[in-house]
Image (cartoon, rainbow, N blue to C red; front, side, top):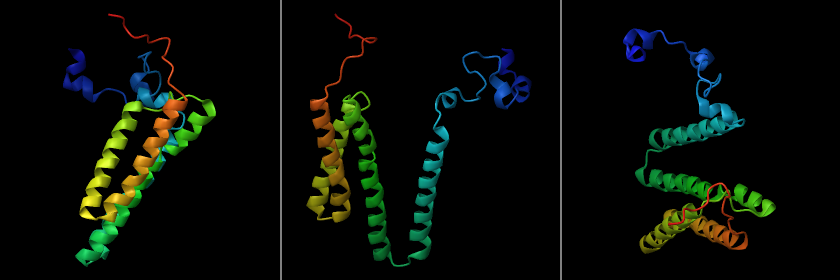
Length: 166
């Protein structure tokens, strides 16, 4: 109960000393961050993309007064982000081909990507809206590429996690 007392919470050390007595945490205040060497680069990329998103929002709401022009430019802006989202797994595809292993790919995510991007593409065709159709086509294409990789390099079952026989 001492750990829940307000005075104990207020006097808890901060920084690396906070978890020095916990062997599972080591010297890092956030245990998950101590296991990732490239965490700084990922945080920097995420912050940069968030900055671009905020700048885009400011641009559309402050500098583009015409509503029709704002919607067209916003559609293009969102299309670029959607295309980059669907093309981002291409870096992993090169590693899959080089290692001849699909262990780093998620089969269920590939199915979800195909269904989602195909649904949006069909919806965009019905509306005759290129801002919906065009950015979702790469999702369909990359899903079929990943399905081909799953067929060419089938996943091997991990020896440490055998399926339970019932």
